[in-house]
Length: 210
Image 1: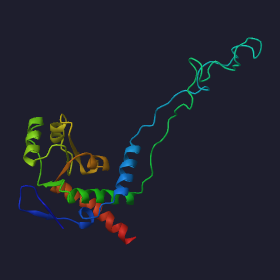
Image 2: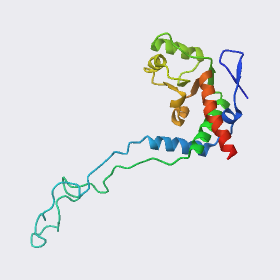
Image 3: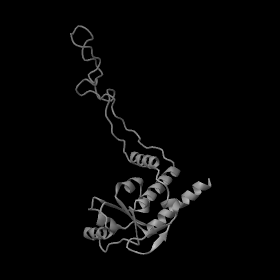
């Protein structure tokens, strides 16, 4: 299959195994959920009654005071007491096989292409790290909320888009399921398309041969 280069009559031939697959909604949902869960720090912590300092002595006698029985002053009902069902540090990572991850990425790219949200350009550069230049580039492409994927990192391009909250620039290695679904359009350079194809098409052939 072929992908049309923006503002050009030329096309580039790409693998249908990467840009022409069917949409697998359940797999993509699992992929995005697992990726976001893995990014959680899981460092929240609260003190339960055993972790709070003090409370070792019985506040008053068991009988004869007219008050309710109490064995410690650090129970959850007391001021300065521990927290009931206190949160503890945990790992939110969800297991996801590499084969599933790659298949999900291929399905996402195919759906972006099918919806005409994948825009292929010969190259995208700026003369200087200026937000004004990036805004002009996006206006020429007719897009706004956009992910820009390049073959390798471009610091000037990144700095030009840094002040635009609706624009993100990354290289092929930084492309992930969340930023693919977050933006209305994905602008990809020809070099990035080749790198993506080499990375995902090769894995597809290897998985098919197993």
